[in-house]
Amino acid sequence: MAAADSPSAALRRRDLCSRGIRLAGKMRSDVVDLLDTYVERQGLDASASVAAVEGVPAAAVERWDEQTGTQRLLENLAAYRAFRVLLAQMLEEQREQLGEADAALGRALAGVLLQVSAFAYHLEELLRLESRAPPSEEGSGPPPAPHLGLFERKLRGLGVLRELAQWAVRSARDLRQLAKPSPGSSSAPGMAESP
Amino acid sequence: DSHIQYERVGADVTMKCGSMDWDAAVTWTANGTDIDESHLNGSYLILKNVDLTQSGQYSCYEGSSWHLKYQTCLRVGTPPKEPVLMCRSNNYPKGFYCSWHLPTPTYIPNSFNISVIHGTREMVCEKDVFPKNRCHIRYLQLFSTVKYKVTLTVTNALGKNSTTLTFDEFAIVKPDPPESVVAKPVTNNPRRLEVSWQNPSSWPDPESFPLKFFLRYRPLILDQWQHVELSDGTSHTITDAYAGKEYIIQVAAKDSDIGTWSDWSVAVHATPWTEEPKHLTTEAQVTETTSASTSSFMPPPTTKICDKGAVVGSGAVAVCWTAGLVLAAYGVLFI
Image 1 (cartoon, rainbow over the protein chains, first blue to last red):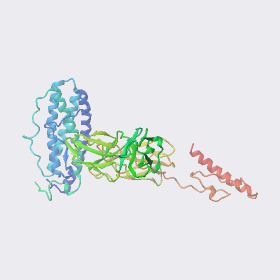
Image 2: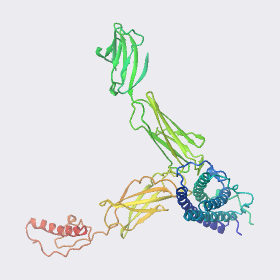
Image 3: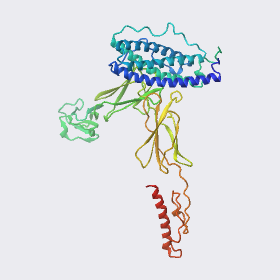
Image 4: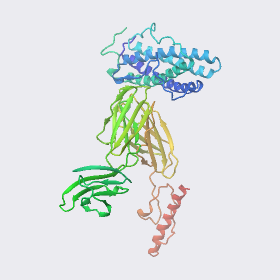
């Protein structure tokens, strides 16, 4: 395996970043559409404010421009792994609640879930390129879905999707930072070790 | 004893001459001019239904001694109407600015106070030196779903008013228009124009936060614009321009992911390349006066339309005849 800053690794990183940026763009567009569908099907008010949802990783970040490449990848990966679990929960709840009655919403949720999984995998690849093994998933991730009433579950779902939409924008920005050919974008100062 | 007194337009104002009794003999002046006694009620000055022209320095003098007993600067104005507030980020992700103005003047001094709240956090909006009614704020957090709430309060001696704006981080992102827009013809290509521009200089990091662009162009003689959206790059070649027509071209910018389009850039004008006019050869070869043709149409050599040996007038006819052919050819282009 090439060292993290060899020319082929740099090319591979750029390639993964470009594709990741496109994935993030498509994901955001689909999440925005899903949000519209979700709000409509669940009978919610699109402008309803939702307090911070427990277990939903917030995209908001301070000193974003000072983050290292590895920090960006790790935070993104943790977020999308959490969203993978949360969206699976939402899909399960939606099937229980509406059964087959709302196939469109189910399909849209499943579609986004697939993209979230693909993006998480993409991030793991980028981490490997930084000579960092992706952290294991055991013991991490959001807590099991709390026992909420139907309306609370709907609002929680709204919170999850809104935060995911923010993440999709942030991820594209993070990957662009990562793709910049500057020392600050590598995971550690100096040469990384060859595995 | 001098001070400032603020009164509303249309109010009735009563001024007392300091500590003088009501029945004291006094003289009032406004900006140095004596005020007629009909405006007095004893030693009180009564101004009914004041208007803006009555602002000024009012002085009261004791009758016989002409000692100045009281002086006030009357400022007639209005309480503030609801201010107009706007917030925008043209330098994302650094921060945003808010600017404001009053829809109608109050004619008296106003003070503005702005508060910016993000969730539970109160942020400081630093006032700009210029322009005055503007402040800027640095983002402490990015990618937040929590909305910003900006409240502007305007206060003057006659009242106060306020307005509140609530928005999220992405919604107010609007870059400045692209700069240095240049449009050039392309040699040997009568239907092309090469347009190039630069990112607005206020946009801090176009590499991480790339802009996309919208180009619009039309020939001056038509009203309808052609539009092209460009997801990257700062140049574009128009390939369907009408030959020989002057074009007007503008460009706008937007962050690739969020926010709204900028205003249109300054317009530039350009005309596509056209072929050099070929010289018109006639027997009655005249000088530059007849060669103003953009057509490649070659009139057949005129054979003695005018009699060379004739009087002066015929030379002019030759000019007119050839010029007429040229104009006719030119006219055909425009049908």
